[in-house]
Image 1 (tube, rainbow, N blue to C red):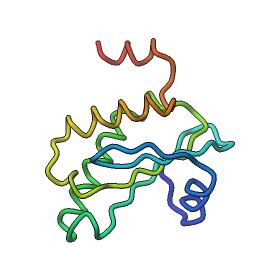
Image 2 (cartoon, rainbow, N blue to C red):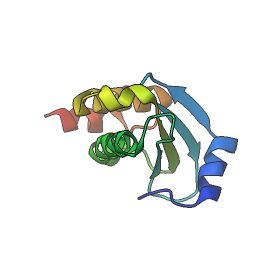
Image 3 (cartoon, rainbow, N blue to C red):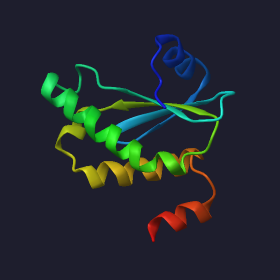
Length: 117
């Protein structure tokens, strides 16, 4: 499920916490709904339209693959940084997994272990 409204993004920034990686920043805030919601931002700091679209695609794909492991009750905003346009998809996914783990956004370890098989 996606974050779409600007007021939802604003709430995450106002009430949430952030974790940074050279490729992107993760902002997260708890919410009352069951399913986690994820929003993606790539500003002009990332580059021109082609680079911003690549950054969004990389983040969207990594989030899609990790989504089944994300704990319920979170609104998450992913903010692309300029170096992401030179990154490979697997690098983005690995970075996202480690940041989500650090932030406590993933479900229990047994689900994570089961997904590696």
